[in-house]
Image 1 (cartoon, helix red, strand yellow):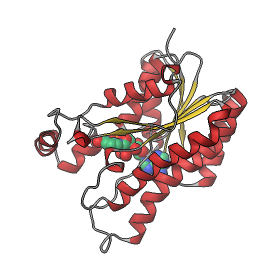
Image 2 (tube, rainbow, N blue to C red):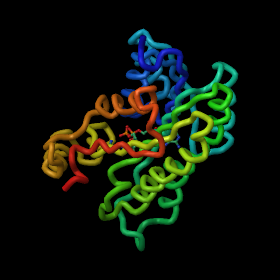
Image 3 (tube, rainbow, N blue to C red):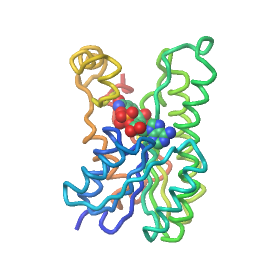
Length: 252
Ligand SMILES: NC(=O)c1ccc[n+]([C@@H]2O[C@H](COP(=O)([O-])OP(=O)(O)OC[C@H]3O[C@@H](n4cnc5c(N)ncnc54)[C@H](O)[C@@H]3O)[C@@H](O)[C@H]2O)c1
């Protein structure tokens, strides 16, 4: 028996490296996965990666920052599946590395819309489906940057800190309904987003690895393993918490 046997999971931003690794890990543990992404091609690629491993998945184009898109996609999920047991709010965008006085207002608003309001909107429509099932686990993908400040990361960092707090409040709101809500805060993970920012994998490693006591970057699979833990009954006494996976960064 897998640790997520019989569970139906929605993962947003499933087309990215962490989202896809999570979808594959979920399926390996027996979950059926609904792969959401604003980019339909990467959503489909994620579902294919799951099915290539013998898992069950469907892909959905969904812009988490758009309430119409969220409502329609969640109603398609409700129609196809008997409910939702697990929600991973993983979709996010970065924001320009600028201090507040030069950060365009549009960039600030876009980061809040996708990273924070997106988690609110998907949760808003997923929770009733969890209530019907009488159980649920919601995981907001935050970041070490929700714990510590980094120059120029006003919008991204603020959204990640807010997600950690949103998990606490939602945990209180839904504790008596058997719906747990936690957040997970990764440090730098070797994904195409991080590689893209530094131009190459070597450049990303050279720049970032020295900053981590563990002297390496995380892998999408390490993050996925922690999401499986939060999604599964192994973490059944855990709600309103944040799980830090940061190679010791914030211990310094
Ligand atoms: N990679 C890291 O080092 C790192 C560190 C800490 C936290 N995180 C967090 O982990 C998560 C995944 O990171 P990743 O590196 O795989 O990022 P990524 O950019 O590769 O993946 C994010 C996915 O979200 C999707 N997306 C963007 N806007 C969307 C929208 N409006 N609606 C739906 N989907 C949308 C993108 O298409 C993409 O597939 C993010 O929440 C990120 O903030 C990543």
